[in-house]
Length: 137
Image (cartoon, rainbow, N blue to C red):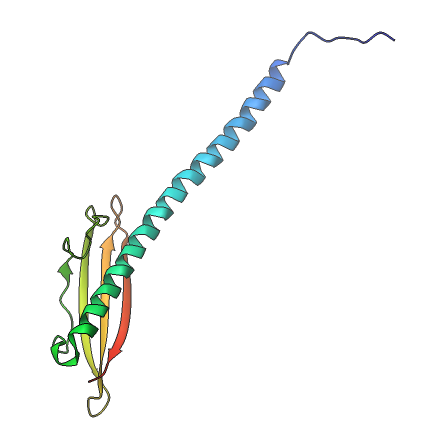
């Protein structure tokens, strides 16, 4: 039995269809890559903001009930190198706001809210993370 050998190679149509499929796959992969890197940046910023808010709450708890700021709306303050020693938020405009509210009648304890807000670089998207705790005398 004699085998028929085809030395013609691929046709132009086969090559073009293969390239089209490859381009579609690569375009999808690139879109996924850029989206994933954007999400990783957002998650990194949110994690750091949560750590800053938690650290601030712990410092306020450690200072004690009598040393809490006066009740009322908080004033946003820019983050310092102490808040962000690694410098992850350095390219962002980030602020921290501490708000203390009297709770109970008579005043039994205080509600302390710490909000860290930032704007993602390259976008006008504002983000905020907020933690709340209660401190008793």
